[in-house]
Length: 173
Length: 392
Ligand SMILES: C[S@@+](CC[C@H](N)C(=O)[O-])C[C@H]1O[C@@H](n2cnc3c(N)ncnc32)[C@H](O)[C@@H]1O
Image (cartoon, rainbow over all chains, first blue to last red; front, side, top):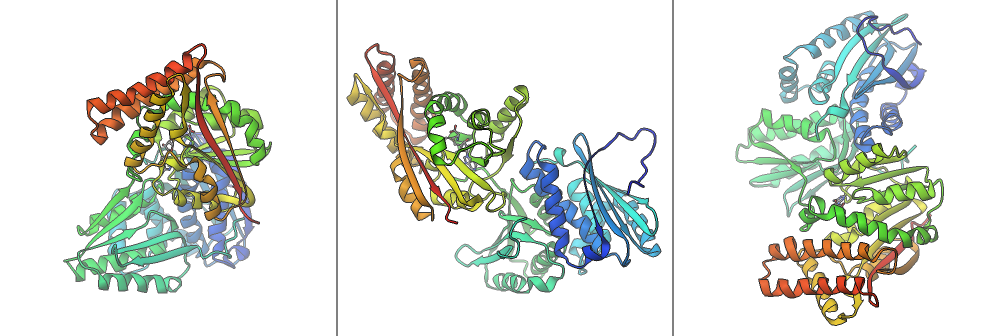
């Protein structure tokens, strides 16, 4: 992969921890892949956190949601790449996956909603509403409950990268 | 990876006596139909209760948003349909996300409250978690280690094992094991944040690697099944009012073929010469005092029964006595001073003991110290070690 560019200035360097790539076809062939991948990666990257078990539980919880979002892509070809890197107390997940042009737009909008300060309000409304949580709501919840920040980057081909920063070390007991 | 398909990954239950609906395990459905029976059970429970329905999610390790929404909807709807009904969601401080996520519900419906289940696991908790126990534990471990380092290999300890120390306290034992036996991994769990802070500080300062300290509840651990070759739990079964629940968890995280190693006391058998009578009287009283707080410091010799009843085989039991002749007698005396402080101090006061009793109670500790430091004296503290193998 290696096509994700970071802001050249000011951005701290995140040290790569682990990367898993697979065919999107393979990934979407079974729902439990979200659970496997999130659990496996969470365990691998949490061992040197101050509380590995707690960190792994939180990380898996957040990462699984992101994978479930990617699972719903409508694009049938290409690769899914999950990359986790770390800077201090923050873990960064970069999830690259193929998506249709209209979905791209959707993710851009969702990311700006997540950053908005009414994120919490929107999220609460959706919990009390009837509809099963949409992808947008899932992303909102990550911001509201895990203090995650999200941005979307263009990737090669028909793919995008969701970049989520998770400051789990700082999350209160 | 873990045997996902062999076990149902989550469980829902309704306990009519306590009006409690509980959800445990990992719930990550793709579609809500997968939850059908569980959602029906919740609806049914709501239909039956009066007053309050407790929703217990203490043992819920994971739940995706799809499932969260499905359960929440039913609860929120019920709040609207039945304003007489209150919901109390019980989360655990150990599972980081649950209080936040479920906490949102109380912002939507005032009839829903969220309580973080935490401090009161068992009656004696306060004394042991934040009380004056840290110095006692340090010296105790230093003294027991002289014996245990020779004993441990007979109970499954060897280099390279993956081990867990449950109720690790301030972590001294884990550090000693790490140095002596080089296990490939040690997970050390306790429910005292201050003890864990202390343990982590020691690890940083002495640049010790390979120990993962983790905050958790021994009776409901987030650790996966069957991952450890050796699970140790020292001096701790005896402080729980229901030790069998902890043993069940120790069994669960132990690999088939691996071993669970426990140490416990029988306080009434502490002994000394001279002044044997006074010493004996006091330690008999120690056992009664703990029993008052529902802790069984006489558990040592019952270890075999507990291990058998928990399903272990190849059970091995041995005892050793820490004495004033192991190393510096002053260490022994220091431990007794610390015991006297807590037992005849905080604990006796809490039980409401009168000054006369306390004076006599203290005297036995004084006499034990006297015996320990006496040039011809002998003082002992017996410990029961037991281990069992989880059947293949
Ligand atoms: C008597 S101390 C023994 C500590 C250590 N194993 C030793 O031998 O020095 C008991 C320990 O159990 C811990 N503890 C009490 N309740 C617990 C629970 N529910 N889960 C985990 N640890 C608990 C206390 O914080 C304390 O550190």
